[in-house]
Length: 105
Image 1 (cartoon, rainbow, N blue to C red):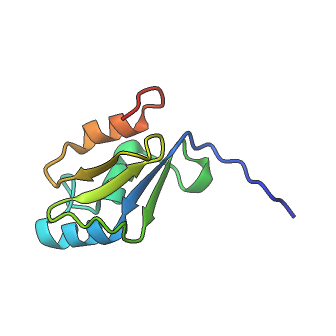
Image 2 (image 1 turned 90 degrees about the vertical axis):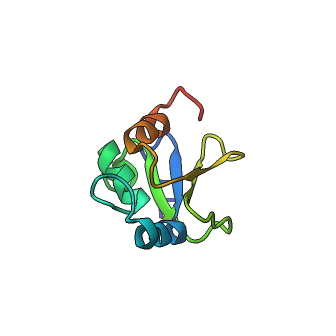
Image 3 (image 1 turned 180 degrees about the vertical axis):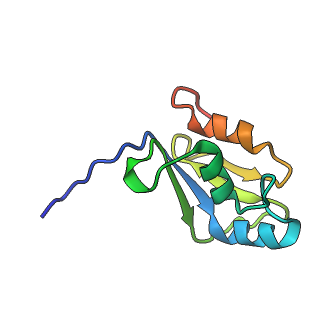
């Protein structure tokens, strides 16, 4: 049995699923289609499924921050800095920041 599995991820982005669901109901979601944050980012980044993608985008259960008008996002390159993304955020710019391997957020 394998004990290690290779992936193409340079880093992972963790998105609070509970916040994203609340934001979709409250303000219509993110991007022009009004999607949950993870789906809007996946579309903008053009990521593949699973471990073959260049970065991981994972929806996780509640992160216990629960901002009133935003979604909590964690970039594993900077685990000490969590972001709160509001519905009016530029998803294209956010995707570019999260995608870049050299730049720390």
